[in-house]
Length: 67
Image 1 (cartoon, rainbow, N blue to C red):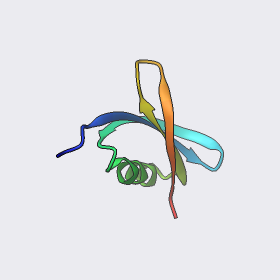
Image 2: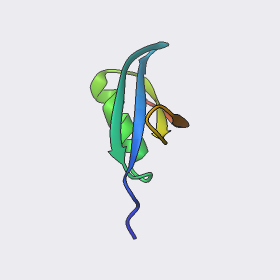
Image 3: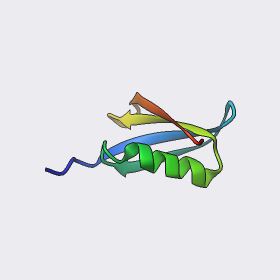
Image 4: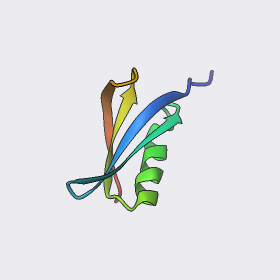
């Protein structure tokens, strides 16, 4: 059975400075890989991922780090 696609927000950071915020769709199984690809493409070193639950609310999910 395929997982449902969900909406996520990724805050991209370089050091302690937030450089971008991206909304994207992915399944829970793919969210880490998708987020890491976005952080890498944006030139960041890590990103905080939030699962969106409404128009102005998000639940912290994980942090991805470029190695």
